[in-house]
Image (cartoon, rainbow, N blue to C red; front, side):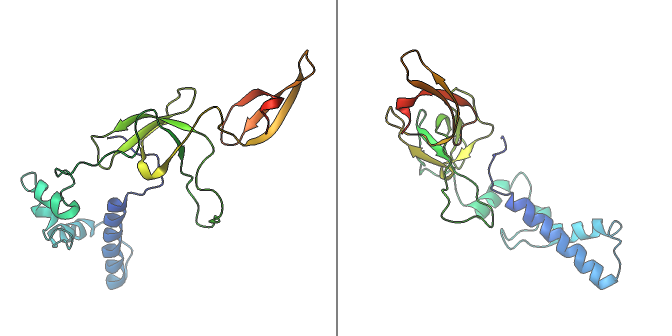
Amino acid sequence: MEPNHSTVKAALAERAIRHIKQRIYRYFAQNKTLDWIQVLPEILEGINKAKSRVHGMRPIDVNFDNAQEVWKKVYGDVFSDKKTTPKLKKGDYVRMSLGKGVFEKGYIPNWGDEILQVEKVKRHVHPIRYKVQDDKGEKFKGSFYGEELARVRKDADTEYRIEKVVRKKKRPDGTYDLLVKFIGYPEREWIHETQLV
């Protein structure tokens, strides 16, 4: 499975790391030492022999024979008969969610300006993910959740915001072509001045 290029964190790994750190720091406090190398095997053995609140078993007792049972206790039966239908289909036009930082304002738009196209729907993974490409056919790395994409309409009437006009070039008929940089798009593009709104 490929990694997702999103802001979603690895919660299970982070939780496991936190659990180990809690035990190590408890050891530091009780023994007034910062030497943890010698005691690490004992700490890990203690974690592996302690009953988990999540699935009710000791990690040392989980094996290939009961892994499916543990999975169902933790995640439920995600592969049950109820089929999830994809929100998007191949060929749909979408905008990508902008990851907001902690101090960014809520009134700033949540969606990027670049209009992308769904190139592939990955139904075999749960939750369903989507591969996208730009209008030149260049594919984005990774895959995206449905919540990270918003379906949009793209046609001849679609308007694009212009970041700046880079150059003007006069035509023989006296009108101008403009080299513009669209917001959210990396390339510059020539348009006729009548296309400028």
